[in-house]
Length: 231
Image (cartoon, rainbow, N blue to C red; front, side, top):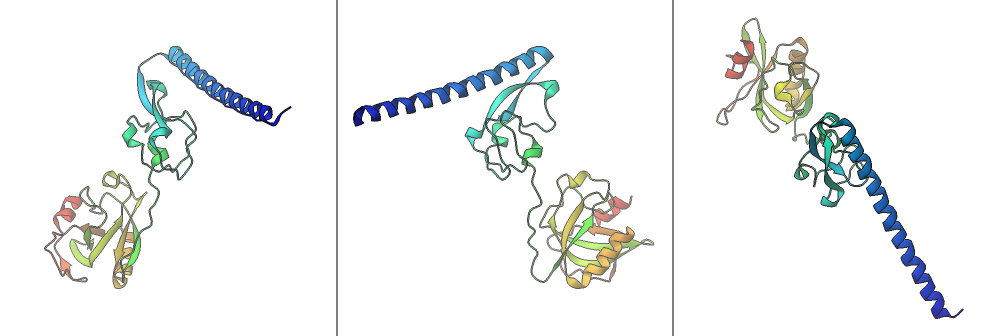
């Protein structure tokens, strides 16, 4: 057997292997599509278009356009938080792995706790969120708040500057202390703010940008935010 014949034969086998792999892939996709159509037929009902993974997506992977596609799905079987728009998935980082062919949900792309950068000279503390804290929907990370202790009809300033470092998603609708807000405080304000939080007397006000020099330890009338919360 000549060397040239061996090379040609090897190339033919390699090409055959590629063809077989492609054929197998098409067979798998056809089988998956068949099962999907059977499910649609069996359950009936309204069909919606969801974004699904075209291959296994691992934690930490950034989704590209080739990683996802739109597929019809029976509305009764749609998982909670399923994504329906490709633009809402492409470019996002996977935080919970997704199996090939499975719908991508908000859970798979949820933001994990990001590293909080604590401003120089301050201490970061977490304060449980309650419906009386005074943190409304207008408050976002980076805002400067004033911390008060409200007791016996008197509001006393505990911290003239409490910078919001992070808020959990949906914090504006929270009515319990199941989640917390992280704020940066001057070291001398930490103990009084935490004590007020523990006893349930802590309130926050959102000052205007031109309000400066709020002194701690000084009795003050509650801000508009505090008054609304106390009503």
